[in-house]
Structures are given as C-alpha cells and as structure tokens.
Image 1 (cartoon, rainbow, N blue to C red):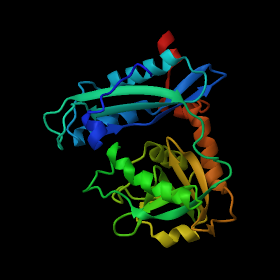
Image 2 (image 1 turned 180 degrees about the vertical axis):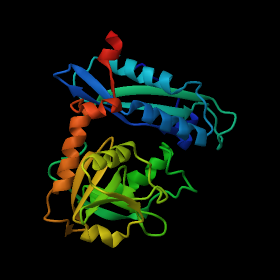
Image 3 (image 1 turned 120 degrees about the vertical axis):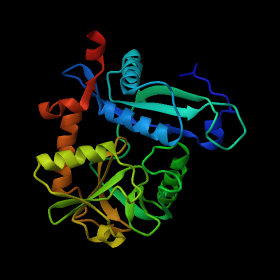
Image 4 (image 1 turned 90 degrees about the vertical axis):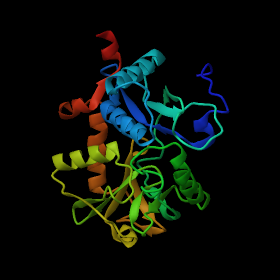
Length: 295
C-alpha cells in the first residue's frame, strides 16, 4: 500500500472523476477459504459506471475478477476482507471534463468487519440533504465525487446523535440510506424503493430480493412515502458495507417493538449463511480465493 502513489495533480483527485466498487470477502474457517461475493456482478456494474463516465481501461469482467482474486490471495488474509477497485481519470490536468484524459485502474484490499452493530439496531433520521438526481450525478453509478452527497447526510445525522441517514428524492419520496438500500416490512411484504427513485441498484439489494423469494416473502418495488417509514412493521438497510442492518428508530419513532424484526432476522441469517459458503444453493454467488489459486 505504501508504494502506491498518485499525483496530487491527478484529475480524479481534483474533480472526483472516478468510479468504484466495494466487494466483500467472507472467511470460512472450516473451508479455509475466503469467498468473494458476487464478484462478476460488481465488475459488470463497474464497467457500466465507466461507460457513463467515458472511461476505458482495456479490461473485461474476467480480467478484473482475476485481479481482485490475486490481490486478496497475495494478502494471505484469514478473516473477512473488503476489496476496493477504482477506475479514474489519471491525467494531471487542471481542466473540467472527461474527454482526452488518461484512464487508469487500481485495486486494494483490507480486513473489514461490521460497519454497525447489526444486532442492536440503528437509529436513523430523514436527512435534509436530498439524494443525487440521476440527471445530475448518475445514481446508478458509484461515482467517487458523488459520495459527498452521502458524506454530508451521514455526518449531519451522526452529529445529531443518529447512526444513519435516509435520503429522499428531489420530489420527496424515500430513496435510500447514505450508502445503503432500504427495505420495509409491511403486512408480511417486503417493500423497497423503485430503481427510478435515484437508488444505486444494489447488488446486495438484488440478493435480498432473491432470498425473499426462497423464504416465500412477496416483494414490491415501488415509490415509498416518508411517513410510511414511521408506520412500518420492520425496516432494514442492506449493502456490501452495512450488510443487513435492522433499523429500530426513525426520527425518534420506534419501529415495530423497537428491536430486530422476525423477517429481518430470517433474511439476515440466510444472507450470512449464503455468503459464508454454507448454503449450496447460493454457491454460485461466491468466488473462492485460495481454491482458485491452488487450482
């Protein structure tokens, strides 16, 4: 890590012209293996982000997957890890724009446990900052510069004593957490904001919808009013970073009975079993690191 150097004149550092992914790897001590979760999905999304930002690093999904596997294998971790690939505009140019600039790529890994106490439950607030509009900074892309939106929201929320923030769209509907998708449980159904509500189309979000199907729980993707949050039976956030994190208070109002709900618990348990390589049905989500190296 100490040998990786990027000039302070780099375009991406000055203007936020980069895009990235966050990928978790889970250590299974019985298998002596780290499983990278939905690796192909993450790199397909990264290539889509690059297309939006006029980048071409000359690599396909499989080449990017191979780099991530090698980076983790070289680190020899025997614990949960996080992988951060970044594509960015690398030219040392003082000029706003995307054309005629050098594109570059880097990837690093580090150990990572839980962002939050995912047993206790989060106290969240609806932020005064609105979610990036897709016609301003594309919300379906993980743009480095776009995360100032999330940073403003969560910083203000935490300064006010909350754990997390929920952002609304420009027209006042629920979008997502500062850097996580949101699900509500109402009358036995999972409800999550629609793709058109300026959400990041989360890979973990897609996994949760898949798990809900296995559990026989119907899912609705639709517009969500702010006040629906206050009367929901359960709420949880999901994402690579936050994993599956229950929300037990919104703006001081208790959600359900103020602790993790039964459906949230079922989804969380199944999710963690799946990403640790303990459910055969979901092994296609996972890329083994050390098994790939040995073979």
